[in-house]
Length: 249
Image (cartoon, rainbow, N blue to C red; front, side, top):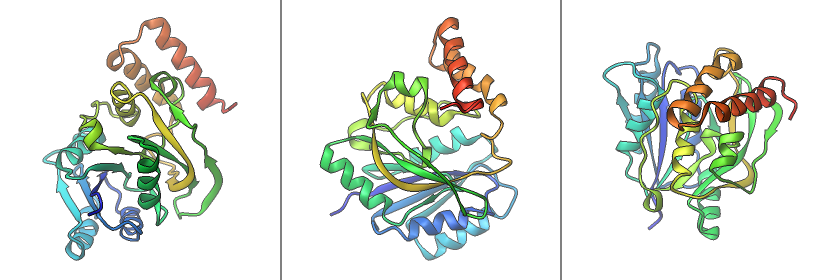
């Protein structure tokens, strides 16, 4: 029997996009999956859209948080509810290509990798390609990810039996980066699959669009979660600022 893959999808006010995201999962060539959607108390029609799909496909599971708590709490709750041997992460506005799960699971098993990300392309709010492909390295360890995180959240899949379950560090932004760092303290490398298997949506009002605002969250990540020294934290903030803000790489 094929391995069950649990798809972890936190959501908040994503009614405009989540239907297309769910469709990209339903259309997967690999069919043994469960999609766990945890709603952080959306105020739009997200709940209605998800429940419509869930009524027609029992692999789609909807859970509503009691109060608005942030993406980290929603993601952790979804991971707690997961039953799969593997977990894959998918944000509620991103899309997968139809053979993403099939190809990534095969890549992991053939190479005996427990923790894998893939390349991805950027799309706009209308799902049109923006002509930019984000490449990945063959592999990255804790220090590499700490310096310049090469990981697209909605590309990640990992072996739950080998690595266990994790609690997502509770910070409003960059909690995905914090999770990868936490996982890399248990697994030496995250391996890169050099194929575009995800479409990452660029939104004007997205929580990650204001790079200057992200500085304080990086500082919190380095100092409070990773317990880096002031000097090392300043170095990483400076490096991140040069690479991400001025885009010289």
